[in-house]
Length: 553
Image (cartoon, rainbow, N blue to C red; front, side, top):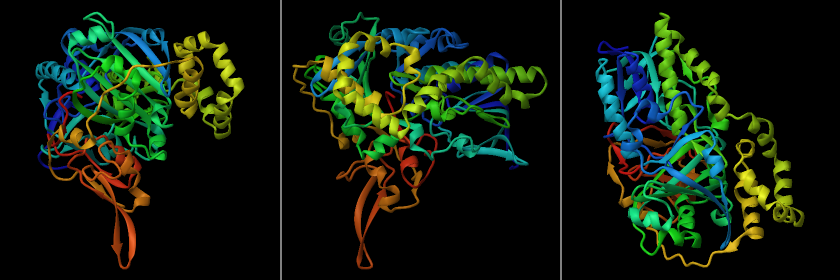
């Protein structure tokens, strides 16, 4: 403790959808709430694939908390959903609208800078009414403790702040969650990495090429052999005047294959299937990347400690099961439930109960069942056992397996739209690579269109981003290639034979012998956190307002 300490009833760290939901619900309950945002503006540090859902079964939705949300902060409603199984130039497409509209009141495409900035304005107005407000460009560095108990937060720019409730909504790279020992970066199997390009396109072209009305939109997913065997897939979402196109891969697979994220994205962008949508002109607005927690393995069942509660990505609350990727809606629910729990505890005269009440609400409202589905625990895990996985792939590629695919074509499409089946999908090569490839080979038709898209190279993508470079925020602890070399390929702004990214490998002559080493330059860093998992680093966020600034997100 220091002599200069600010005090509030609640402090919320991060003003994404989870933090905004927590702050709005706290303010509605008359709680004095301070919100701290690291970026120059809410959304400037945030990236998502681009769909936010409102689930019918959820106790809270973003438009329920912010009634004008869809009119002011989103892009297009997503009314059509498809998945494309790809093998070379052959494609078999399935309509999976039933899956995406199951338990769904609505689903909209969003860009995070626009969305989070609008949410921040609403949050600031509401929290000011209860004696708080929103401050930007503040880097919360850790937890404030008193006699070993968490009582607040420390920052790089302000005096320590003490509060009865600390809401960590500081994202997938949460320094508060790690400081509390509730989350770590030790296992690549618990994470996905997403990489995205926002592509400029006039609204009229989107309507025509995707055959949608001006107030409608489409979501397309991609799997099969176009990603060099890396477990994961691609996506395309229609925005108001742009497309969000990206890839999401299991980080352990990305690392094991030594695949380069930007090249895998380009494999999607240049596939013949994309020609019908991209046309002859390609103008990339922004390149971005982020880590994605796999809630099946990473969602914390008890995300609290003392006065601290974790919400959203900071708690691993990202539902990623086959073609279902839902995170922002769960963050909204968690943030509001955490605030509700604090209000309940305060009404009982003991705010120390807030964490336990929050945990109970997550379970009672069914949030944890969605994040850690029983189907996966019972069946999906079995499919990940080495011999079972090997046999499954052999059968799928055999004459018997191929006959089964041909005979069960209609059943396969229905299976892709079954929430129960999706909840059982194992995290293996079978559902992401092998089976989609066999489906396309046996049931697909060749795509004859020519794709003329030429994506920017990595140097141009990095050069087009906005940076306010501060002091280095990552320390490379072990520079040997054995310990940290995976970052050279896994980092989305690095690559072999590219000297302009964060990580580079080099042969160094030392005392008469050559050493294979890795060097680091944090200036082009997009703050995804990938290297914290695949390399030996000490990783923290840049100072408030410093580092990369996303204009799309």
